[in-house]
Amino acid sequence: MASGYAVIFERAESNWAAYVPGLPGCITTGATIEETERNIREAISGHIATLRAFG
Image (cartoon, rainbow, N blue to C red; front, top):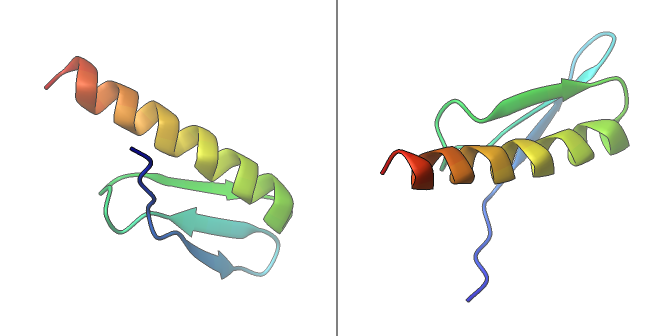
């Protein structure tokens, strides 16, 4: 079963940020929105793997 998470992207003066409201602490930044999207996908995967590993 596939599940998805809402991701909020915000533009700052010199970069982009993204966070996942459903996964507290899952945040990232990037120089471009494309880089930030790649980073948040990786952050979500790592966050979920950590949650699974530590229950």
